Figure (cartoon, rainbow, N blue to C red):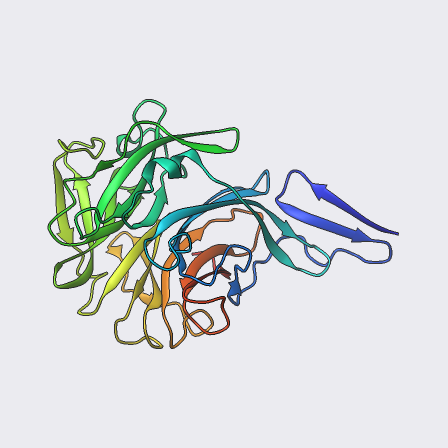
Length: 329
């Protein structure tokens, strides 16, 4: 008789069958991109971010989509779900249910909203993303025609993201051009936090850094030093930086790719960021791959989880979300 049980101490669905031994002691996320079919639509679905509890095997996914406007304006869409992994046959699955969070009701407007970014995975003592018990949700919107970076405080409880206060523009980073897709890097050696984002203030999109002079929360009064990163930027368009630990992933249509926008990564070390490396033909195609982000899996899985968007053939239409396992770096 077939039996199924959950191991509550690890985020895996363990399936045990009479006469069948467990073939895996840790999870393996598929190394070939899988269409995230349960959340995709016939319209464009991309620019995502994910919060995961590996101990509870649950996640919350937020992404941009123009489905609600039938292909026009982009708003944030949200899903909740569970992660399952079968230790007998090695099958990995992310199961979802539609869920509306109060935070999104606060930040969605009649304009476009892109590039969601939670700070909850970072040390809460750093003041860039803590004021009292609030955490910070960064995103981009275009109320004046160009993209600007915005921030909204939020709290999390009972499976719900709730806004705390009104969204505000991060004016020290915004210009008359397009700025967006903020991500934060913690340099443990220098004990310094640096924000990275994209901007086309020099013509093409480049990756910029911003450092707060006094370590204050980004606000209208914060003084920051902003600089273009010559290592991460090229003469082409370099977009959507996302940092996990000491690894940055981003999208670029620079030379050396497979066509359109490809996904690239760079590793931070004692000499700063390394020269970007293409993520290879198993992930990139002749079409566009966009807004990647990586979620570390700790000791539960042999590789890390990456979610990105692509307009490659075989999807539901436009840009679709995909998930894939990538090497731990």
